[in-house]
Amino acid sequence: MKVKARYMWLPAVSVLAIGVLLVLTMGKVGHKVSSHNDFYNVVMQDGADPWVYKHTDGFYYFTKTTGGNVTLWKSAQLTTIDAGQVKVISTGGSSIWAPELHYLNGAWYIYYAMDDGDNVNHRMHVMESTAADPLEGTWQYKGQITDPSDKWAIDGTVLQAGEELYFIWSGWEGDVNVRQNLYIAHMSNPWSIDSERVEIARPTYSWETNHSPNVNEGPQVIIQGNIISLVYSASGSWTDDYCLGLITADISADLLNPASWNKRSQPVFSSGNGLYGPGHHSFAKSPDGREDWIMYHVAKYSGAGWNREVRMQPFSWNADNTPALGIPADPNLPVTLPSGEAAHQRYEGEEAAFGGAAYASSSQNSSGGMKAGHIDTPESYVEFSVKAEEAGQYILLARTANGTAGGGWSHLLLSVNSYAPSHFNITNKGWENWGLSTARIQLNAGTNTLRFAKGDGYGEIDFIDIKPAD
Image 1 (cartoon, rainbow, N blue to C red):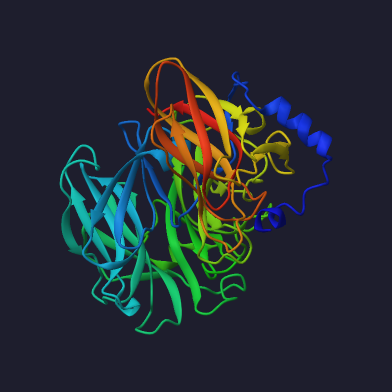
Image 2: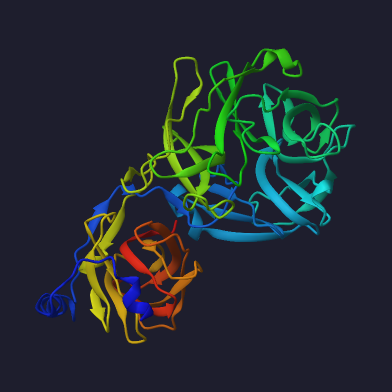
C-alpha cells in the first residue's frame, strides 16, 4: 500500500500502455547522450552558510557550516564542488558556525564561530596554515579574534581595503540576545584586532525586525570601482523571510566612522520563484574571471527553517557599482554554466534501461517532461551506458528527487561496472522538487555501466551529467 499511495497523483495508465512502455524500455543497450553547457542551480543538496573562494591556482575552495568541525572542499569547477576533494579540520569546540577561508599575506586563514556548548559563549576564532594547498599541511590555532569588549560574535569576515585589513562580524551589543548588529574593527594582522569595535548597522527596517531577536548577520564584502558593497543577511535565518540587505561605503572613506556606511531601505535579494529564505552568501568569479557569481543557501521548501541547500547564479552590476542580484533563479529552468567551465555529457533518465518495477513516467518539472523512477522493489533498477574517452576519475551529477513518507533521506545503490554498490544519497524535499546528488566515480575508457538500484526509501532521477573530475 505504501508504494501505491506514493503515486496516487499520477494520471491513470492502461495496462496495455504500461506493457508497451516496458517493451520499449527493458533491455536497452545504447543510450542517447548530448553535450550541455547548463545546470539546474543546485550546488549542494544540503548545507548552509556557503563560502567559496577562487585561488590563484585556479581551484575553488569551499566551506560551510558542518557543526562540529571545519570541512574544506576543493574543486576545479564551481558546479562540481559537492564532489570535490575534502579535508576535515578539528577545532576542539562545538557549534562551529559559518567558517570562511581567506588567503592573506601569503598564508591561509580560517575564521569561524565556536562555543563551549553554551550559545552565549559564541566567539570568533582563527586558524592559520602556511601550506601552498589548504588541504595539505598542518593548521595552527591562532586563538580567539576579538575587540576589547569581547561580546558574543559570529559570522566574521575580512575586508581588505588597500593595504589595510578590517574585521566585520555580527554581534550582540550587550550580554543578552536582543538583536544582532554588524561591527567593524581594524586588524593589525590576520589574527589580531587593534581597535575598538564600531557599529555600522543594526536591524531597523520592517523586513529586518519582523522576527525576534532582530538580526543583521552574514556580512560579505565585494568591491567594484571605488564602492565597497557590504551585503548582509537580515531577518530570522529560521524563517522564509530571510533575505539580503546592502550597506555601501567609498573605499577612500574612514571605514571606522559609522557615517561612512549607508544602508539601503529595501532588501536586494529575497524569496522568489518558489525558493524561500535566500541568505548567508558569498561571491566568486567564473573560471575565466569574466563573470560574477553569488552562492547562497535557501530553505529546501517553504517552512523548512534550518533545513537548507546551497544554490548559485550569476549577477550583474548596477550603474552605481553595486551588485544587481535580482531574485533566486527559477529552480526548473536551466542556468548557463559559469564562463570557462567545460560542458558535460547528459543522459536523460527516460533513455535509461529499466529492470523490475522501474520505468519512465511523465514529470512536470523535469528537463524533458519525463523522469526515471518507481525503483520500488529489490530487483528494480535504472541503468545507464556511459562512454568515457579515457580512464580516470569523473564527477557524476544527478538531478534527483525524494518524497518518501516521513521526510527522511533516502539512498539508491549506485554500482559502476558491476563493482560493489555505494549509497547515492538523496535529500527529502518532496516529489517534483528536484535537487542534486553527486559522486566521484572511476570510469574505464569506452563504455561503462552505471546502475541505480533500490536502496533505503525512494528516489527518482531526471537526468545524470558526467564530466572529468579535474
